[in-house]
Image 1: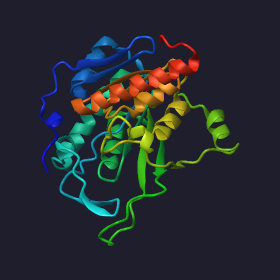
Image 2: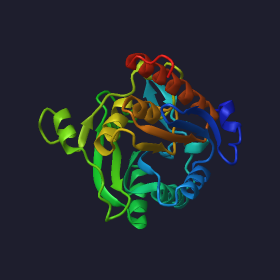
Image 3: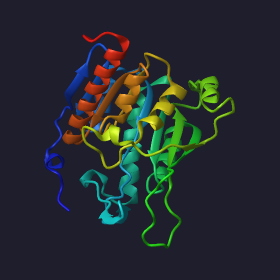
Length: 283
């Protein structure tokens, strides 16, 4: 399976600003997340980010198969998702998480998604770095693809780890809002949320795209209006769209130029819709 042309373009060093909305406070960059996070840490040595939502490589692009629309398809997503072995994969997780920890404010928190192929490494790296693990969310997909080999249970969940910057962080948690969203009962750590809708792929799709509803819940739970949300693996811009809808500022970077261009279109469209709804077409 050949790589898309965009995957063969070397990312700029330093990362290049591709999209900016000064009124809203949104910036999207094309480049390596490690370099981007190093620049951000130098800019804000005390931390400048309230929340991070990260959907890192799952290291699954190794020739596996899945079922899509009743057909067998290869699950390879790109060179960025290929496994380099457990040790090197874990070292990468340590490196980006270490940098994320630096850019978080004292009471900031981070949400990281993953399957069993990566999430245990993420959790261990967090413990090594001194994050405070808060919750492990099971995101249940109502209509997952069937298991073709019939030798395993159907893979119908992904894990989302929520952690605070340090053991002493007084992390934000809007408990009352979460309870209200759950019909007046305490919200549990199993979230049943459908896959991204067709409308979320209007400008193009990403192979690991998350539903806006999932990211919105994380943002609502742990930030307030005006806070800064960062996504170091921005993909097609789901976190950016969710942040915009909820009145948060956004910073994001991605290694793949085609994904950043899709994200830019999605964010520009969401910004226009927000402006029209607020009655300010010039925004």
